[in-house]
Structures are given as structure tokens and as C-alpha cells.
Length: 363
Image (cartoon, rainbow, N blue to C red):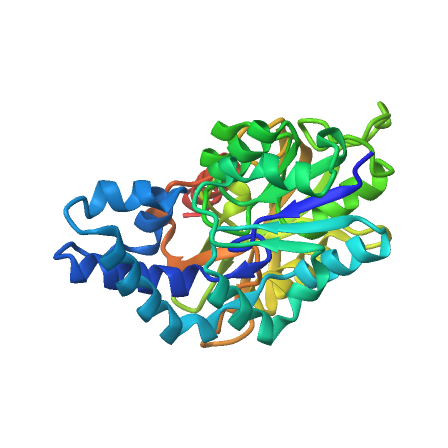
């Protein structure tokens, strides 16, 4: 039975990545190094963060690095926001009478300043901040608060969080809302990987708060569970460019917008709804292209069996404005030829090839 949850802070409950990137780049440039792009930073950054400094700024004293970082971070931490589903999950923990704790490397002053905006500090039995190496703290937290390891879950977004959970002998859950990529988190081998905290809540509720298993399947899962029907589309603009979206759910590869068909919903209605939710675009000219089986794809963040209904369509607006929801990392409008050169997930690659073949046959 899960009775206690220990949370990481950055990338798990709040989105501070833009502010941290800005402050880290200030440190790098002050040290005479080149600034990093977001993707470069996510690939390079690690905890304990002293390892990041040792690799990139080995000749600068730690005290100077910290002074540069915190001075710059204070100027930009107003941009730190709570992550989607975080508040609801903390409320769920309170209603479920979980004991909740914070274990984070975040500076105590920054934590207090951010909590003035979000009030998250009221949800914790006790916060532990300023922890550079969480592995050195986890046993103290368990001992000091009389927590049983087999009743405790550590939730975080980085490999170091998973290593900490294993070091403490507690359960581990990785979320895709933060710093590390799906590939990095899989390397750490957590007990469970979820897209966000709302999915973790579903897993806990379905499993009656019992122990989690590696694939996020509740104990006693129905062996007759059926495949999940989904819809997705290549959306074209007036310039005949297709909308491509990169998402953490598909190993940070590029794909198309879409999602699950709801009960009682037609496939075209589902397509319109999903595209509106994920891109804020309205579509017309819907044309079915292919159906695909997607079974146990290692590109997807968890084990799944999808039936993919793939379409093409067009934007209703002449100058469409894309607004991505929490699933999308970035988007591009590209010709199909240019899109094929991206790092695509396999179903999208197959769809593009099918569309190009169909267009060629019509000429």
C-alpha cells in the first residue's frame, strides 16, 4: 500500500526550466563558454549539478558559479509556473491522506519565493530543500519521519531522482514534464513512467493504492482489455505545408496531432476535437488515408496497443495560429519532403509515405 509520497520540485511540480536555462547560460557565458540551446541543456544537465559544472566550467570556483546562477535566477524566477495537474494531484494526496514530502536541490529562498505564488508549501508535511545529492538525504527522511520504504513512492523527472529512490529502497515514478527525456528516464529503470501527475493518480486509483508495477498496469489488469482506437492527421496550410509536432510521449520524435476516440464519438468528431485541443486549429476537408496497428512500440513512453486511423485535412484559417497544449514541445510547418528528413516516429513516417504515394498516383 502506498501511504507516503516524496516529490521532486523542478520539472515535477513546477516548470522552472526556462528560468534555469537562462541562469545557467548566464553562468556559462560569464565563464567564457558558449550558451546552450534548450535541447543541449536537457541532454547535458544532471544532478548533482556539481557534475554539470565540473564538466563545463572546471576552472571556476563553485562559490562563484553559485553566485552568478542565483543572482540571475532571482531576476527570472517570476516566470516559474506550476505544472498542469500538479495542484490537482497535491489535493488528491491530501484527500487520500497520503503523507507528502519534498526532496529537492532547489535553493530554500527560491522555494519560498515560488510558493508565495503557488502556495504549494502548505501541501507538504515537511520540505527538504538545498539538497545537492538526494541519495545522501533519502535515508534520513525515511528514518526521521518513520516512513516504511515499501509504503513510499518518490516522484521525479530526472535520472538522479530514480537513483535516489533505488538507494532508499522506495518505489519510483518518473514524469515526462521536466528535464530528462524518455530515453534518459528509461535508462534509469523506474518502476513507472507517466506522462504527468494526472496519469499517476489514475494508476494509483485503479490499483487501490497498491504497489506499482513496471509498466504502469494495475494489479489484476483485465486480460481481455482491447486495443485503443485513435485518430490523427497531417494538417495542411494554404502553402501546402504540413504541421509537424515534437512530443515527449514519442521519445521526443516528430509526429502529428491526434488522440483517443471517446465513447459515443465518431472518428471525425474525435479528430476535430483532438486537433482543436492540441493545436487550437479548426479543420476542414478531412480525408481518410490509412489505418495502422501500433503494438508495443518502444517509441511510445509506455506499453500500449493502438489502432491508428490516419487522415489528411486542411486548416480553415488562411493564417493559422498554432497553440500547443502541454503535450507538444515545438511545431513546424514543412513540406512533406522536408518533414521526411525529421526524426519521425514510425507511424508518422508511414503516413507521410502513404500520402506522397497517393498524390503521385493521382498525377
